[in-house]
Image (cartoon, rainbow, N blue to C red; front, side):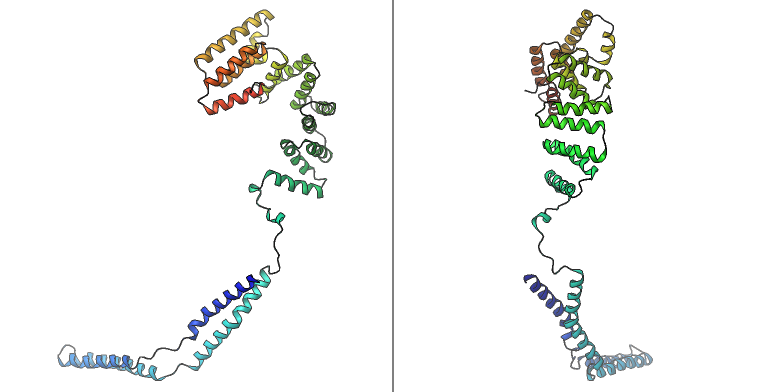
Length: 367
């Protein structure tokens, strides 16, 4: 009701703005003042002619022009406003008083939404995607998939998001639906195995292991599946088998593979070969050595690395390599001492400290 009252008030104001100039009177009367001016001008012409300031022909022409203006002013003073002008103003007033509200109402009823009620709260929350929370977006996708359960692409998008949110049971269902409607693949099987392990608190259950084995059957080089099969072996107490799996993965990995530190830390955890902590050149040099010579070479390299880092401690990767080497050699005291030295060396550099802490987490030494 308040809205309609405001509309009516605005319409009255608009009509009043149109009628105000139309309702004003005609031209104001000048009470002969204009004619008096012209008479004064005629007298001034006579004076100028008598004084010889203008010629007779010029005076005559000026008298004719002023006389014409004097007659026009007299006629204008006598004539009332034309009837046609009055009718025009009356018509404009009627149009403004009646037509403006009628036209405005017709346009609003056709283009506006006078019967539209308030939006429910759920619809008001439909903000642009950039401003919505992740939970809200997930809820929208889930609602869509409830109505369209065969939308394989939707399940493919939803599954990893649910896993990141820690909703492992829902993620398992999403990955199974993704496999059903998108087809089987090594990636999807490995992802399914990962969320099954996540749902079990990080334990590679027999169900999760089955999924990893299916992934390997589809692609023997699937990194995630191979890693978790190694983790399953470690959890079962078969550390030698775990080390063998991870060592084989490292041998095939490129030098810049992002998951190399994870594998190296895993190997250090199970007491695997020291080779992963060496550079590619060092690994090639040590390939043909016997165990004694290889061990002596490795210890010499570790000692030189420790000495260099004491002089220049800005090398975060060097510190991580040193800590990893001590762990592989089974000297956890030296590893912890190197960890303390590393943090002291980069304490004043926030970015290097962040990189160091990230690397230490991968080594299981984040405390």
